[in-house]
Image (cartoon, rainbow, N blue to C red):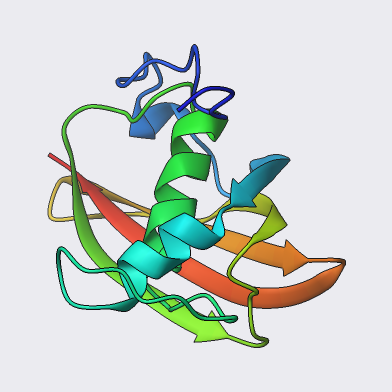
Length: 138
């Protein structure tokens, strides 16, 4: 994709989860969401269905892209344990989103580090969704 916001961003980061601290903020990042991407994520796998409102499936995609930009790649060795989605407003199929991310929690249990990220996704200044990811460092 020409002009992709991930152009030049490495796949893997030099950042380690233990280097992050609770309260650390990144962004906001401008993330374009095309109607074509929304259409692909709306229907059954391998199909496209047009629609005016983006499906919930865009949220994991957008947050993954933003995390990669925030940390200059994805830190290796992490295991995604859970995601939660709090959709507060409709997201149009084709729009530009502003996404901020914060390390909302860090916890060590049983010798393993758990890092939680909170993504705030806005469309035209209105919070459209809050997304939480919890990752365990392997």
